[in-house]
Length: 481
Image (cartoon, rainbow, N blue to C red; front, side, top):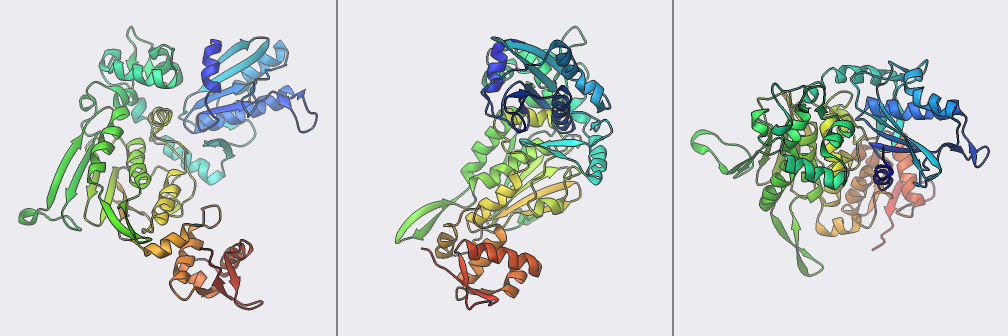
């Protein structure tokens, strides 16, 4: 490994696919090297979390702020660090490891792919990588994850007779130039992204590589594209009442598919003229992030094993629905998504990593919660998440919940000040005499009395509401605008 490759990593931030680990201890004895046993366990904890999730790289000898401090351990200790994934994990973890020197400083880079098994520290726990955190997995999630990993073989399959020449090399090179400039394209696809098999005379792409970069994706998957249908009215009609206004089909390698679909679909997202402060202003009928995130998630997480169905976008006068083949992959549940839990599991980890490197997927596990926030800040109903047969659907409605005055007042509070339940209650109170009771909070926010009391007290401390009387269970809004 060359020093310039380390430089590429250091220009990135910690996240789903990258972690920096210091070889020094600062809490007990500032500036003293970590014990080899402690550093080994830290390395295998992060590596196993990445292998249980989407794969990634770990750079040892770098501080969290990306300053390079090196590994001060001797040769025997370095050997033990390199062997740690085999010695401390069950089952043993297959990984790539490189030692590199920057000046007089020694570093180690570990690279691991998403595994088909659940890795655990010997005699200990299993971990999972979510964004920049490596979290411990409870027993029930370990079982669900084991079941889910039984269904992630599709993108790793080798297509019959597929070779390197079936890929659009211009697309591949553009991807490499954007993500790891200066490196060999086949090396990047093989070593970093695990998309090529070099065991034959010609490098052979797996299904993930073909979906992402193939010259003709339909040769390998007949329905990997996106169907867009625009209807007149609020529901589908058939036969003599057929109400299709526009129909488009997008077929392209996945690294181009999202941009092509978004570019054409956004032409049909209408602007609405709203009277605001005695001036007319334009606003799109749906928040841009919300509908585009639904589309990106569909491309990244759909079940490509269901080759007879494509992603569909249905647009009506009052709502838009993004329909994705495949149910949410365990351990993700519909109820968790509706409750806006920050959760993450990739049915297609190889595809997800490429799309993340291109910037389509930024904060793993945060996309759905942010969709809810964007719709709420627009004064619209929250996204509707549903399952029908094998289709997972996200529906966004453009009918406003609040009038413009209420929305303006609500938007003075950031998401750090109030959550969605508090926001909903404040909107209700603002339109109903600017007062509310604890019982009304319980009913509107759908929470128990203790939660209602706790969240009301937060608003009292922040000066948003105040009791009508001392020790009262009724409150008034403290208007700030």
